[in-house]
Length: 171
Image: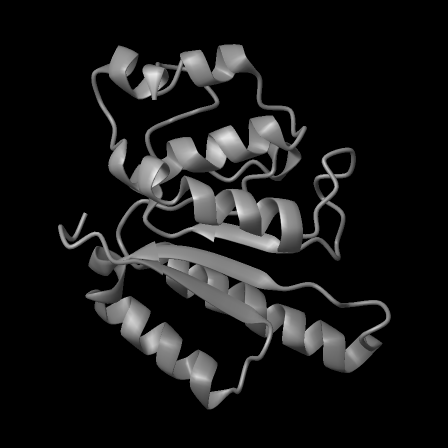
């Protein structure tokens, strides 16, 4: 949170409020390999409410991905790998760019559709990953989220998990 304060910009609420849930998810459930950040069968983690990007950056740092303390200290600085909203960099463990509320949710459903297609084609022994979405109440209010969630249900996607942060301020 020091980096958010130093930048005098950013949203500390979601990273602080969701830290415990995210820590358990990353430690006990998410399957990744920091030594092989683009490993095809890794689980995907999407922070749909991208303004909470500091949580993602901290998780990546603590999990051994190439995200240094210096990177965290330069949060929201010009040229820094830690902008105010995540920008795709799979080598660092950032699966997709998010910014507008709902965008990450729709992208994550697309990832889950791709996983389902690959799993059907190559089998569960080769394709066995999941997609996790962290989203807030502002995300849930967006039309793209409603449409993506409806499509996920219609297609019976069973390997996608949405974690909802009901922060009651719609950020």
